[in-house]
Length: 81
Image (cartoon, helix red, strand yellow):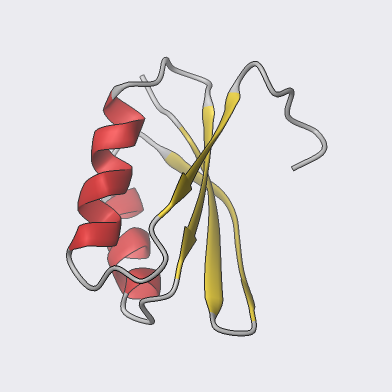
């Protein structure tokens, strides 16, 4: 995340929430951003991996990176047009 300035990088913590809430909250947060902004999401729902990947395939947003640390799934999403 170091390559993104704090001006265009936003964080969303959806840890503890179960499907479909992590994706729904991320979609809402992305709508509030401008194109090119980056959303860093932390989630604990294992199903979020599948949900986020499927959503990226059908949206204008780009998954820049995703990784897992212990029981937390991280997603770095760039807002599309």
